[in-house]
Length: 378
Image 1 (cartoon, rainbow, N blue to C red):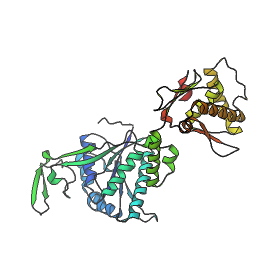
Image 2: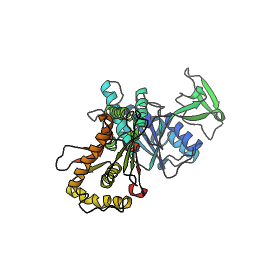
Image 3: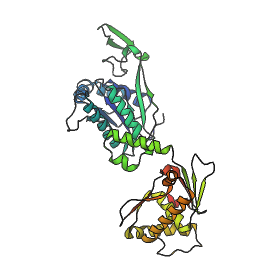
Image 4: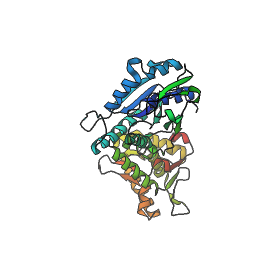
């Protein structure tokens, strides 16, 4: 794997009572893959935190610090953060047992993963090897909802199997040739260090972040609500048409599954200028003040595309934009008799009479804007 030094690399884990997964993951990433980890984030319970403090860190004397010393890493440069799961009342949970606990845990995972993925400079290596099965499931699904292109999901695999779940194994020691263990029956056995291998199997997952609207990503706090939003967006995506806004041609082309040829809608220069701008920005509040702010932008687009067509300072006045919206929607309705299809490309308005908010329902990734000067829409 190629490391990208511009990223701050984060190891994220759902931690139960097996803190070995932390040093096992660090060994694979930092020693085998040569990926520096700057932060460790552990989503856990009070019981999981206590176990990690007692067995992994031990006030500076645990396996984590031994790993750093043996392999030449600075422990103080790897910042560890605990995120202890809380219930709806803000009380930290020692375990996850009831339906209410599970709901609180799901919401908590959503909160932490959203915070971490909101930092554009980070790259997350998430492991689902630790914690209760429900915790691993919540980490998987929150990564599926919020994970970015640079983020990855892993499961830790230790070879040979005889030490995979052994509580005494944390990482392959560098300063010995053999490591000593006790089996389940307390019988001693040894394993040559050269025979020990730690792999992190990458788990492919569908990244749904792009289909979720930005406002939803930032505001929804309930895991179940975000899942419902993602499901709704997926359902919408099955029927969404593709839209080409051809500025030089003064043309909208709407392509859907039911029509072999795109539906073409001719617009006037001022109409397609405003329509293209609205597709680019996503939403516009039409008031006198806001119209004055965007009028120079719209005029620049218009001049670039339609130099021979005159526009005055009143061409994009807020009342003119009201009229443009009405005319565009009328042309769309005439060209597209199917109201379900038409609603994707019409200019929608909320119910605020004095400052109506205009928007296009179609997802941005379904819209292509063709312009003489592409820099106008960067």
